[in-house]
Amino acid sequence: MSVSGSPSQIVSDAVEADGPADLSWQVDLYKDLHRYPELSGAERETAARIHAELHRFPDWEVTTNIGGYGITAVLRNGEGPTVLYRADFDGLPVAEATDVPYASTHSQLDSHGQQVPTMHACGHDAHTVTALGAMAVLDATRSDWSGTVVMVFQPAEEAAIGAHGMVTDGLCDVVPRPDVCLDQHVLPGPSGTVYCSPGPMTTSSTTIEITLFGRGAHASMPHRGVDPVVLTAAVVMKLQTIVSRELPPGEFGVVTVASIEAGKANNVIPDSAKIALSCRFYSERWRLKAVESIKRIVRAEAVAAGCEREPEFRFVGLLAATDNDAGVFEVVRPHFDAHFGVDSQDMEPWTASEDFPVIPTAFGCPYLFWTVGITPRRQWARAEASGRLDIDIPSNHNPGFLPDLASLPVTTESAAVAVLACLAHQWRPTGLPDDAWAAADWAGEPAGAAKGIEGTEGTEGTEGTEGRIQPSRA
Image (cartoon, rainbow, N blue to C red):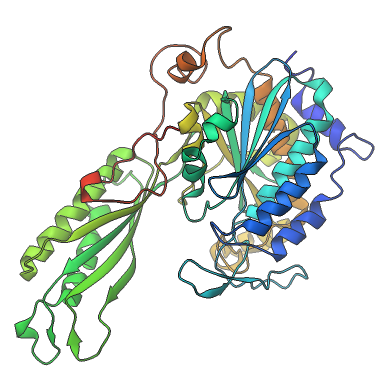
């Protein structure tokens, strides 16, 4: 036995009023986590609370402090597949602007030593409560399935270093190798709608810091210097042509100049300027093309301005695109359709980026990422009817972003249904060793190389890295 019965029926029976899975604690825990968000890499109290909540599940093997505040919980329940589910739990430096009684008024020192307000403006509190709720369902239904479930509670997703930190700190040695990895994210949409599709779902992210070197001078004597401010202005304008003139019209790409720093006094032409770029692509081919174009443009503008020193390029963040495996989608989606009916819908690609793929890439296994809408349905319907979705519906990272509490059962059930669907599937031929499985086709046939872009998270480097996403192995 891997799973006896339908995943949907198992979950429905478990969560009904007299079912074996007690989820009465979820809303209170969610509110507590929402009140006290902590920034990436500083989630000490949140991790401690998660660890305390894991005492509900004495048969799960718990390991703490992986890659900082990362936590894993493993339930071995006989022979069968191994399924990994990941949940992130860090907050953001945002001042909450909701009016709920459990709104965050918390603040914390950021990485620059500044006291800043904090908020769960991306729903990671809901992700955490969802994972714990799914554990409760799976724990209560152990007689209905066999296999191994690995829960990963990951810090520092917002800083794009959490998944890589856990992998480099030995995650692959701490937990058994999964056959498949799963993850979900809450986002604006009619509350309780589950969105899932194969293929690219979130973009890759490349963050580049560029230093331009001019020659300083008195502000009244610009002819005696090389003004890096004017140079920066030229670079910023020219960079806008990469997407509009160098990418095919059907390809998605974003090259955003996110910050500019130059000068400290009004009577001084500075000797350098810095710009930071955020680049987003679904295609690795066009991401690499854009990186080369950025370097070409910046160097050419520096030469045109008469700079005597080459610009410096520093790659401070690299994330692969989230590219859902078609085989995993075909396993899970029918069960979402059976459980959620018309509320199981196709997912449109999301232009945000995720570090989740770092984990399945490290294990060499396929994965699926889906989303769940958390906007109250009447609020969504009003905004949609008036053509004001972008205006009236707060997005992730907005001070007004707040999951509808009615969406928590849906996120919990979608996690449990997906895990059970994967436990019911034969992922590898009998007797295939781990090394052969890692090199096998991810639909379960041992032929060819594993699909997908492999990613290194939060890497720092210079121009010599060429901005390439390299494999990450523990």
